[in-house]
Image 1 (cartoon, rainbow, N blue to C red):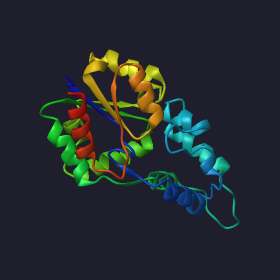
Image 2 (image 1 turned 60 degrees about the vertical axis):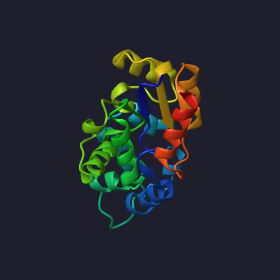
Image 3 (image 1 turned 180 degrees about the vertical axis):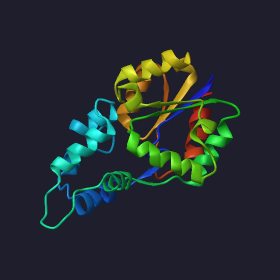
Image 4 (image 1 turned 120 degrees about the vertical axis):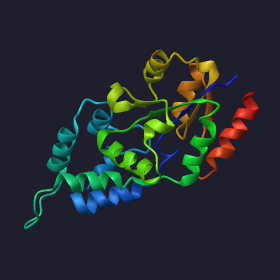
Length: 213
């Protein structure tokens, strides 16, 4: 029997737009090669170190400035310009995603497991509050890569979550838009739902639960 639901954040709950983010870094921050470290799922290079807590937000911003092209007459890149450009990746939090969490929280323990960073989480929390909820009201616990010093698809981040929550993988459905993350979860005994962001989340979760139970 499934007792727990573990949701990914970006691509599952929050809609993403990678191109919009890259354009902002190009036009606002003047970092022309941000695509080299900015992936859809697990980040690369110094960005990966940022999302696994090895780099602080201050250190991350300083690296961005170092990699930004100097242009005559242009002022130094400000923190808020970097933060805004990074958060262009986060487009919106649809109401139906909130409704899905609200529907299931009465019958299941709800958790979040996300590869993310402290800059993006400020904006994500704002998105939830704009819908009338603090994240802690909708999730029993938040497992965030930069706080855990680890990231999906590493098996270790799932194991840390299991140890902290005492939940059993065979009683848990893990929902993610990354196939690599799903494969790791399933190798540890979780049930997986490889979610397509274009589909209805409630319908997909409901169907998968019927298949399992």
